[in-house]
Length: 152
Image (cartoon, rainbow, N blue to C red; front, side, top):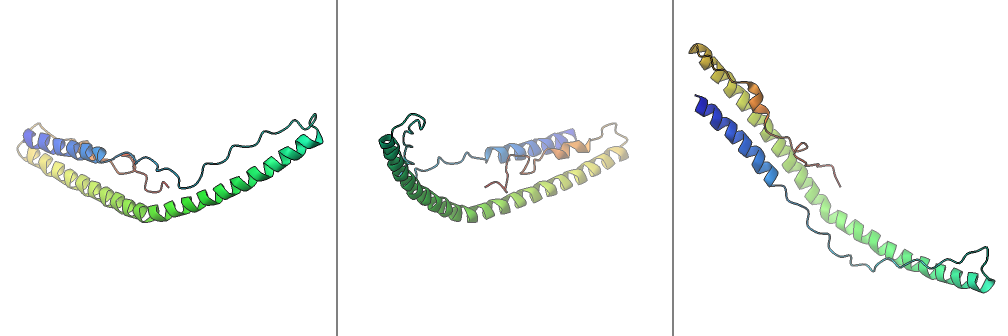
């Protein structure tokens, strides 16, 4: 009977290890299809700059500001496009998390029932062995396993 208990505990540990191994790191972020953000202009020291320096700096600032706005709009479009691609996958991932958590719940419930039956058997046999139901708590819920379905 102890070998059955050992087998049940080993199966539970294997389930947890398999779930942890199934987590893979995110792929690297692909390069942006937008240009890089431009470097900011050098600002003059307003307390000592001449009018001509301030005019050049103002022109440079306006040019830079326009370039920033163009890149910013491109990046915003890129973010929206990526989120639109990600959203269906997020929903799929949440479904898998719910399925996984439900399976862990079923596994724990069956394990507890098994422990109850096993302990009833031991009691009937006047055996001193009894199994602690805590062995059934080895499965990890997805959130505890590092899966956050709400993360964006």
